[in-house]
Length: 291
Image 1 (spheres, helix red, strand yellow):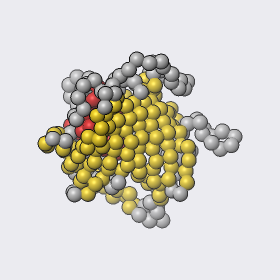
Image 2 (cartoon, rainbow, N blue to C red):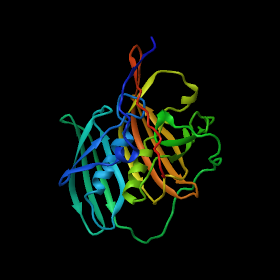
Image 3 (cartoon, helix red, strand yellow):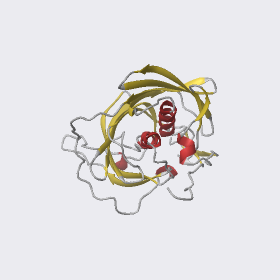
Image 4 (cartoon, rainbow, N blue to C red):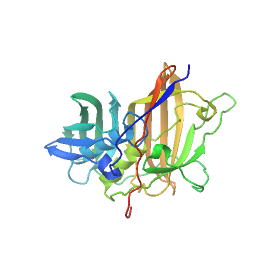
């Protein structure tokens, strides 16, 4: 039996900046609000990632900038929820600082992330080249009405042995108002790194089923600064599916070829057989004024 569809109301009045930023309560305690843009009854993980970055950035002084994020999603949250974010100052050194950010909703811990900061240094350089891809032309879409435009390029298609070189390629860019500060841009990049769509399932464009997915963890490395109001190529590949879990790796390149970030994520995949698929009617509304 196929799953049935139910629609619920979800809040969507927040701007992008309001959704990914946090408000200081006292000391190292912050508050964040969850929007309902993605059309699903649980909060989009990119919002959780972005808020963890924003809270950590607020506790680090000087020239240090985020260089990585690692952590787990422990429980789902609901659009409209208020999250309390607690930052632990794990370490402050001359070159590196480390923060642990815990999100709590309704008295229960929903996520825990470690954010590493480092002071910029001059060094040699190397990066994986951006794969050959058609320019970002054509009419973009906004998947699930998120504040990013997307131009899908599809998958590589299966090799003779059945594997895929990449399971999704897409051009992405923000269409929301964005502050030029490094902290905001990094939080926005963390948000974008979770727009993985169906990359976790090779050949997903050829499959018509009711499988559901939920992020279990997320790792993200920030390599070079960039402005997400410009087009970036997001390339993802599924590296393994076993025991109802899919592991995905990805890279984000600026249009000029610079490798901006790389990520890895594990997702739980289970069929919604005879269950109910819930869609929320909240949608992101394009913001007025200059970006």
